[in-house]
Length: 91
Image (cartoon, rainbow, N blue to C red; front, top):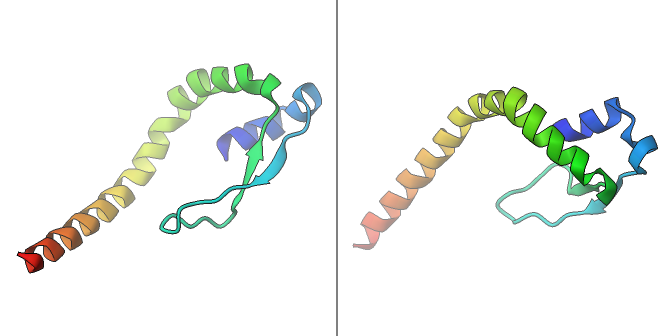
């Protein structure tokens, strides 16, 4: 999503060509609101790599991790507890 905003804000369609939507199949336990994935022109790959290393990782990734860490921890804790209870019933 962040790359898509960067793409639009910088009018990269004009420079690299149009991106397009393509259906993506997600695992059944990982449902998504939008199953359509963006496909970007290969000519933009270098720009994406630069953006990922020099903008996203250095400026935005820490915030993403902080905002999602508690959610992930709770999901993992629930899964681990459920798995542990199931295993103890089997023994």
